Amino acid sequence: MISVSVNCLLIGDNFDPSMIEKVIKLESEAKEGELGNIGRFKNKLNPHGSASLVLGDTKNKDESQLDFVLSQLTKKLQLIKDAKVQEIFLTINLGYTEQCNWEFTKDQLKRISILDISLSISCYRIEN
Image (tube, rainbow, N blue to C red; front, side):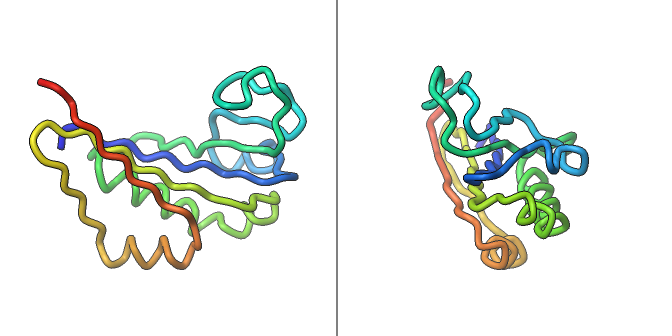
C-alpha cells in the first residue's frame, strides 16, 4: 500500500454543524436547507446537515488516522448525538501498487461496533 486516507462524515436531518464546530474541527459543512456547492447536492437544497471530521496532523498516515477519528468520536459521541447527528459514515480509501492488505486491531473493531457506525473500505490500484 502506498496511500491511505480516512474520512468521517456526520449526517442528520436537523444537524447543524455550527453546534459542535467549536469543540470538533469540521470541514465541508452543509446546513439543512442550504444550497449545496459540492457532490450530489450541488446547486440543490441540502436535505440534511452534514460535515466531515478534520483529521489534523498525524505522523503515520495509516492506522493513526483511524485511531484519531475513533478517539474523537468516542470522546465526543454524546455531544455529536446532542447536535442531532443521526448517521456516522467512516470511509477508508486504500491505494496500492502490488497488493492491498489492511488489518484492524481488536480495539479498532470493538470501538467501531460500540460507536454503531457504518464502515466502507475502497481499494484502488495506483499505476507506477
